[in-house]
Length: 157
Image (cartoon, rainbow, N blue to C red; front, side, top):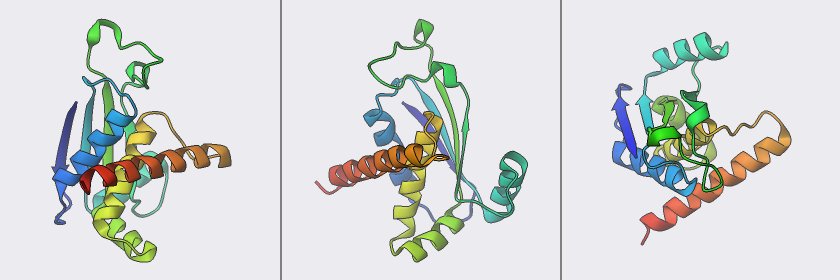
């Protein structure tokens, strides 16, 4: 699994933990081990620009996911690998640590916990999950909670 991370946010972030939770989510979801993912941490100004340009939103958001190659994503053992064993380009996850820190304070947990949650959230979006409808939201957020719980249990051993 090739995961690249770049912290251009100016915030002090444990990028090893962000990589680890992304890898855990991809592994648990049965994603092709040749898959490639990019994680970018950005400041509020750049996140606001991306949110406006791609989502039509005002101001910064916490996470954006940009799928690259949806047709080649291996969602698990029920589907075949991409033709020729080519790596699947999953896409990019863009995180804003400053927004995450504000949300974490409101939610009553650490900024690191919020970034881990947002990383899993972004991975699930890249894998085709959404939360626009109540049923989709229940499925996605339930899966997100299970992935985070299993990742945390592996770290506490």
